[in-house]
Length: 256
Image (cartoon, rainbow, N blue to C red; front, side, top):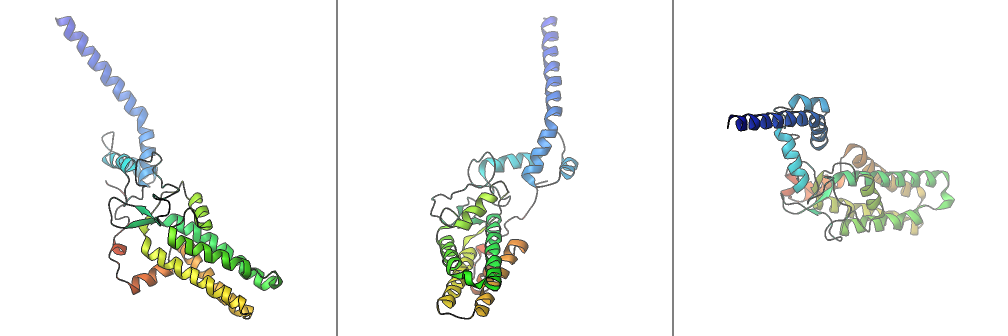
């Protein structure tokens, strides 16, 4: 009987030693994983880590499996924890969030798209000044009009060319979800500017005026791409009462 107790004690002690060794080996991996999902630096994560498996890491894993609006994770069981390329259904302008009413659009992808449109605008201005005989507006105008209005109707994917490319460029960047109404309003304004620009070209308005309109598009896309300030969204907030737009998108950075 005593030998049985001794053998059981040895097995328990062996299990504890093995479990402790595994925890020490897994600690760096857990810290890296926590840094990845919470966005903190490894040093800050290490300082905050306590008792082997921090509560914030458990929350991060939980958010990775079920999705979180505040932390910016995709909806559904996405093992990578990032947003998907297509919305469900594909013609929806944004993603449905279980923690908020209405649809959400990925702000990271919209800023990447704004950067692409900014390049198009700057190239158009350069050609209008350096090589007006190429007549870039007659080609760029319809493209921008189609791109803006399809994004306003069906979201960034799969019909908007710059939206598709912007989404692809940010597939491995943690998304930041924001309401779709201000973005739809802003994209409709952008399409309207494209219509004005193309109309000026068809009515043979002087290139100086056309350059002025394209320069406005350049500034608007630059503000959104570089500074994250969407002028159309700001106008929307002043014209319409939008309670959902006032919800803080990421009220906290960590759970510790």
